[in-house]
Length: 314
Image (cartoon, rainbow, N blue to C red; front, side):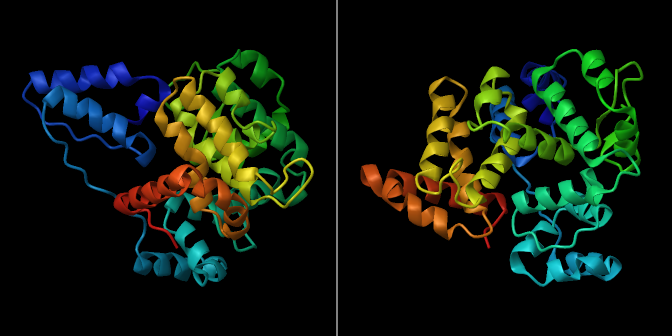
C-alpha cells in the first residue's frame, strides 16, 4: 500500500477493486504519512467505512527489554524525549550499529548521530573515506529523487566506499531485481536520512522537491530537513528571526502549486517534534497569532492528529 507514495496509486486502486469484485476483504498496511490516501482508495472502492488499527511503537516494558540487551542505550532510556526514539526498532538498530554516544532528543538529532557514527564511521577510513561515503549516500539520494541514469551515478561512486556502506548495512543489493544497476538503501529510514541531507544542501528546502515533481514519498525526508533547519543555531545563513515563517512560506507555495494540502503541514509537524522548540516558537509567536490565530489553530489541529494517530507528544 505504501507504493502509493511512489506513484502507484492506480495500481493499488486496481487491486482493491479486484478484491471487491471477487468478494474479498482488504487489509492494507501503510505508514502514517500515506494513511489517508490508502484509506480514501479503499473507502471509495467498497463504498463503506474503513476500520483503522494503529500499530504502536514499543511499550515501556519492551524498551526496557531492549536496554537490558543493549546497555549502551541506557542513557537514552533515562531521558523522556530520547526514550521516544527507542520505540522504533529501526532506530534502535541504527543506534546500536552506529555506536551512538550522545542523547538525541528528536529525529533530526538521531539523523545527525547516525550519520556521524554509521555513514562517516567517526572519521575512520577503513571502509572508504568519510567524505567518499558521505558523497556516495548523497549521490544515491539524488538518484532516488530525480530517477537519473543509474549507470552514470553508480559508476561515479568510490567502489571502496560503496562496499563499505554495504558491509555496514546502509546499502544492500536489490533482492527482487537481479538486473538493477547498483545498490539500494537498506531501509526507508536510511533513504529518508540521505534525502533529507540532500535537501538541506539548498537554502530553499523545497527547491529540489519542486524540480523532482514533489513526490509524496519524500514527505518524511522534508519534515526531517525542516526539523534540522528549525533546530539549527542562529546564523547569517539561517537567522532565527523569521525562520519558521520562511519555511512555512516555501511549503505553502507547494500547496498553491497544486501538490496537495498535506505539504503545508510539514513545518508545523517539524516544529512540534523539536527537542526544544521554545526559541523558534517565541520568534514565530506574532505570525502564529495573526489572522485570527490561524497559525496556532493549524498547530492545534496537528497536535490533535498526532494524538489520534498514537504518536503522542512529550
